[in-house]
Image 1 (cartoon, rainbow, N blue to C red):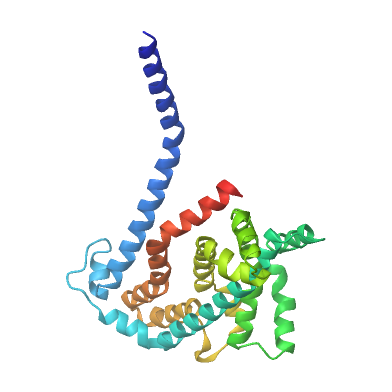
Image 2 (image 1 turned 45 degrees about the vertical axis):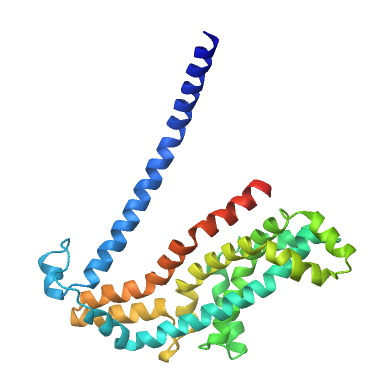
Length: 290
């Protein structure tokens, strides 16, 4: 009788837990389905001819028309814009991680007077609206002759990403076991040696996580690129997509425009597909032990 009561109690507890989480799972499933549907529709539309696109908006392409990608790649310097984005985002990511990793390690593992206040300064940086920064930053870069240069855009990307990156990496470095630090110090390792040889490899899941988030944000960034890169072939891909839209709008070549959209969103889509487990594991460790 008592065993039966325990089984019923466990069954009711499981049922209540399922009822609690079911709405969340339904929302996540609906969100994933809508995202997959939107991407699939964009991909299908990019492989149609314009005639097929207007005849059947929701139908599948009869033939794979890759000519749209050739047009999108060659028109309005989209190829140049793509490699500009690769260069700017790659340099920005390297600088962000080079600066934020040791800063977060010091704030998390080496106590000193004012360290907590300094961390609050980094956190406060995330609260400053971008609209407030636009005018002073533009004139600052103009005075430094960095407007319409990739170097100026890289500086903005690095400065704008440090607050989030340092905050997240600080939480992650705090989760690492101190015993390994003590063992390395007994073996005669310096502070930099402990950071570089011991703690940094252990923090690789967190570093990969913030790297992915920064990559996606910088790859799709539009406002700063629009303000600072004013003309020529030096535009990044999101701004170049707007130029492609203007060009294709007058020629009514909407299929090529869809191909341009796929070129822009595909790198971010692939990053999330191949690194989703690393993102989840990095965030989960920081959340459970932070």
